Image 1 (cartoon, rainbow, N blue to C red):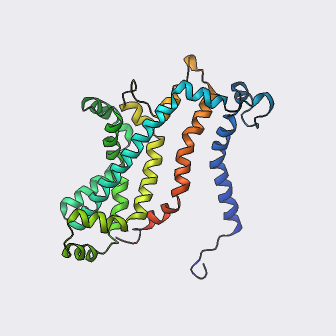
Image 2 (cartoon, rainbow, N blue to C red):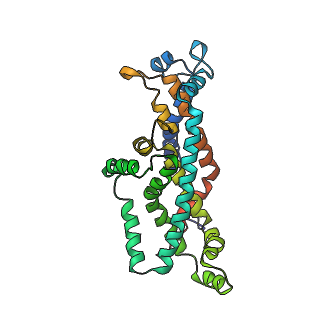
Length: 279
């Protein structure tokens, strides 16, 4: 370490390059096979599509038609955007209250949020499915509430660390000037939390967009399907799968979240480390 910078040797550069390629390779393989005929996907999955193997956009067209992917894309966007916005607003306000009040009730609530990250989903998925049906939460907007419950733990944990680093004197000065509590939070505190807000938004969006199990267990599948559920319906009887159409649909499902991540990824490290040095 020299001049405040950490020097990385060539070994680590090569090592992390190989690891990165290992992570990217499955995605590249899906893209390549999305342009092949079904028979060639099974016969030689690693070859470049040329000649008779190349079918252009035929797999994409067939996949969209068979799964009604455009409608599923719309429901996925509704669920993801609504749930992420609800998580950001509710958990940021809750974290602010926990840090500024800092009494026994606040500490107990914070502990419960931490426990929320420990309990595995498999322990509660069947009671949750039953309760969701009973309370009418088996709709895209009902999913917002369910995702709020599961996403609150990590979000509150990250936000509390950031808020501890914001001087309370700034908020007190705003209130002395006549700002109400909601105005103080939304005009003073929330803008100062921007890096962590963007980080939480990215993490929650990636999770909710790609989630299969929770929507599959709770949504009314006769009316609503997310993209991950719709793609699953490409499986036919006796284990038959239209691999070409499935590869095409997978690429279409991956593109939006990859673009979103590439656009926002620079904020992740800043948001995660924003409250790292505060106790």
